Image (tube, rainbow, N blue to C red; front, side, top):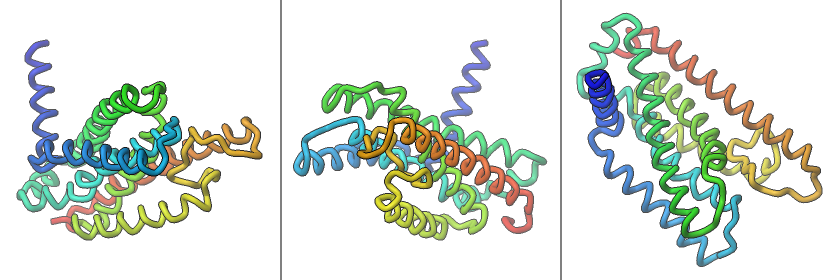
Length: 233
């Protein structure tokens, strides 16, 4: 049991080093600094905190944490000469990148949990786990989309540019689609006026369902693209 746990620990730490290119501390520091930055801006603009505001505080640091691993994962393997090894073992590539995807989301979730505790103690009292569960929906969707795009472009910089454009478009349409089930950044803690609670809850349910389905489809399509070894090597 002890040796199995030690092996699991080494597997996780090794993959985290690979995922974040041995710069994990910098990503954590960037997430905390970004979190502090947006809180500071909000304090000067509108000090009235609520669950709706906290949700926005947590989404963007989460996106920052998953952006690099998802966009640059394939290129990093190519640069380190590991890509051919990964593709050389049947079905190994699926296990490698799925484990890395899960670990990336896990690390983002743990750090967001810590940030949520900080916000809970200093800004506004709220239930952390329900908040974290809602925050992970758009993060999972955009992470899977970035992974899918990386399997199509196979270049970190190109993937990053495409995802920035896509994210910007989602952000631009977030306001006109504020109460729509098709809004990727839908804030479930908003209390819309002139709308019954039942309708609002049904919109939230549909939105989360669409994001889950989109996440699954992006992952499946990304895995499908990984079947074509000659396109990567």
